[in-house]
Image 1 (cartoon, helix red, strand yellow):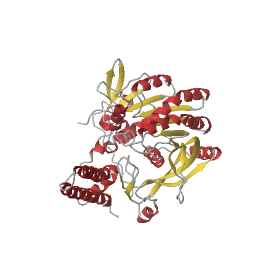
Image 2: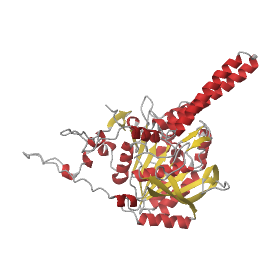
Image 3: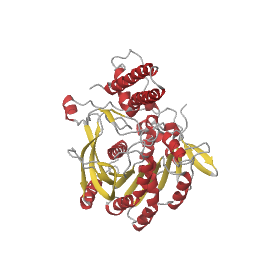
Image 4: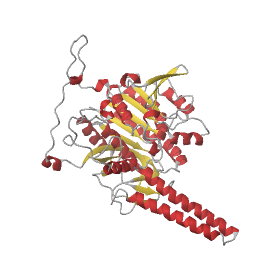
Length: 484
């Protein structure tokens, strides 16, 4: 089935809705006022439905649409096809790289030298033979260890274990094997096309999954605590790049269970993290209209999140633990971090390394109170905020106009002692996803998170020289410069 099929279907729905509106408009002239009102309501619903389907088709998987557009374009000329004597300019992404990332063989000549150093051109990589290409897998597998207090779906005929939005009121443990396609482009989460009615969970069309093209769940199982810890320890024992490190991801608002697994796998894969990746999935409603339910649901999950974090810190065998919380997931995390601070103090052999608070959907004043209680809980705490986060703006209106901790209002972002606040407005590329996953959908931020986990270098401008240092009320925060 063509990549354009969903767009054609949604376009047909919109055209049909428009024709229906025109027919009803002519019919209303012959009816009484009461009937005309009912028909006007039907007309509005039909038009909104069609426009919503078309709009959502364009928004749901922009990476897929981008790939189609790329394939429609002319293929790049090879070296043999280029005109003689013409020099092809490398793409900007390859021209602009950090000084610290420059290979040693391209380093400048020592100061005082009269002759500049001649750059050494690395040899071209050997091309794989057809036999080697055929033997390469079409996808990579990323193990993700999960904890959740969602209720397990018991749907008849289900092909695999799944979890819904209802609350189990207990902690469940397990492991999932998530496939990442070989064609994966950092930092996307490639998923099948789907068309859903906006503000509902009703699916009109959904493309079939293909591990060659999409993130998929290859295997998933619920484990006992002993089985869970045994598999985690085996993973840590095999790690090398991130030896004995754990990375815990706590998702945010409007996130189904499977989506949390995909996001955790994407972050681990793009970071080339070979330690033990974890995700904690609290029972989000998984819909745009479930904001109130999600807020209460995240708070009721605190004792289960606490038990999960304590299990990883005290019994997994990890020597270094990193935590990334997104959106509403920051709310329960902030409440349990003070207890985690006490546990870490009792375990000198385990380090709470980096805590990253991405777009916290938390009242700014509440955040400042909680942030003071968690100072010193880890080697460093980083807050990513953005002024272009549409979800933050909507949350602010819902919260009576009080800015959120992940927002950047006119007077600047929240700044608290002991926390590095970084304004990521200029590099947040996820506007098709309400700008609400910029921490994971921006190469710049993925690179920064990777540097944080490996080096923990502070202040932020030391690891990212382009950051601007801004003073606000006697304190400092950092900001990515706007592109020129």
